[in-house]
Amino acid sequence: MRKLIILLMASAMLASCGRTAQDDSSLSIVAVNFPSYDAARAVIGSDEGLSMLLPPGIESHSYDPTPKDMVRIAEADLIIYTGGHSDVWVDSILSSLPDPPLAFRLMDQVPLLEEESKEGMEDDEHHGTDAEYDEHVWTSIENEIAIVRNLAEVIAQIEPGRADAFSENASRYISGLEDLDSEIKAIVGESPVDTLIFASRFPLLYFVREYGLGYYAAFPGCAEETEPSARTVAFLIDKAEELGVPCILNIEMSSSLIARTIAEEVGVPVRTFSSIHNVTSREFAGGDTYLTIMKRNVEVLREALGGTYQR
Image 1 (cartoon, rainbow, N blue to C red):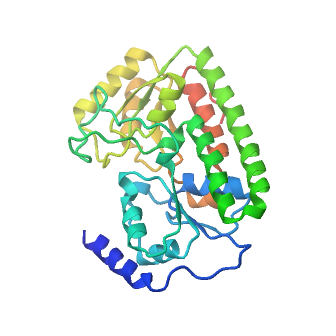
Image 2 (cartoon, one colour):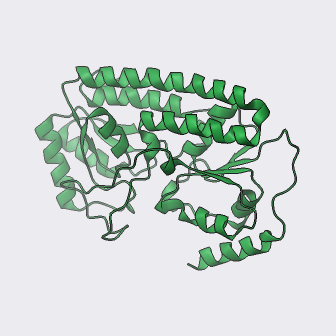
Image 3 (tube, rainbow, N blue to C red):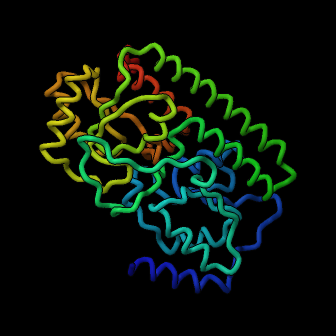
């Protein structure tokens, strides 16, 4: 609460300043996390006028905004963010500004799924007893297509003269997403296994629902991950052996200790499946995109469902 009060006080100080005057041909877009950043980059066709608040390599659930971040939001033409519990602070900042930028919430673009507590999963005390919607909407390729398409229309409002270019860029990116979707459907349709075992958080509810896959995991998607209990570890080991899964999955930037423990007991390898919530500094510098990361996920999925893993 103290940090939030400090941020809101800074917002009030900025209110008299408003956004910095910019040339009509320039873009100023702030994306809170990597999925927001990548969708905007795909539409623009470059990183022109685009910045990301969540630093590469930082676990998204531990991120705290700074007064400098708030200045960047106040001066932007457009802010892109998830719109869920993890970035509710964005709404507080926007409501404090006399002339807020356009806002694009990923969760407003698609049908939402409620987070669920799965058999064997650690109890989640992060959200209390009220039902919460899962924030990781971009993990569904169908959702990502809707996000990119809708975002192109919003960015065109900022620069109407480039609307056709934005639309063409979005269509090209969506074509790649559709190809990837077809490949995943083919893998799922031909696979002898239909359930995934995650030894960490599970931010992939939209993904498994889209492709009709089952799953078991140690924690819900937005849980404050700690070490799971012995009961949860034993349950996942039993399920992995019962189902004959070819590998144990771990989410990016999560500790692999429990995954390795389960994998050793079952006699299978550990593979990392990215929720694309953030990327490493090396991935960011190398120009990785949602598409390139999801393509790597496809190879992990192929093995996890009984196929051959191709590194």
